[in-house]
Image (tube, rainbow, N blue to C red; front, side, top):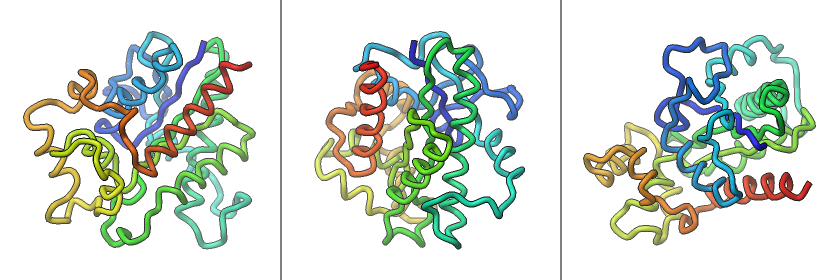
Length: 242
């Protein structure tokens, strides 16, 4: 059986576990999935599994990873991360600790655990001219590799996950979506992505929009999304070939 360990930034992306200690990794019964978890589920269904089935999904809050990160000496380095790249080192360590948690879960899960690490690439308008998703994703891969963990999947939208959903929900769906990655993810921007997505979805909840099939991952063509989807497919295909 394939299980999934998810870690995101909050309830509006992968979801969360209300009322559960931030130090715990929670399972299906406590996990309240968000829109990105549902989008991820639509991809893994192509491989005959669902991360929303009982005992198939676990969730580690970003706060639980932060607790691990805060206990690590800042002098610890990882090969491939240059001196001074403090933020990239943090992403690598985030993936490293998620990999460790995934390994701990394998016995309880009764099989392999795919760890999916989500983080927006570029929420700050000051960085809008320099796409960061590839740097962040590569840093996460370094963290997974440092643990010898081959089942890690970075999920890094550029600039934020709203761009991925807007690709499907904008006035001309799925057309020229790569242009969305060049927009600012900052809430301070006058025409920010959160505002545009809210207008596009109207009164409907984003979870419901994903569940009814209005977001077709097969038609999304954006560099940051394509990299995530390709990595996920490579990991799952490799597992099924074993």
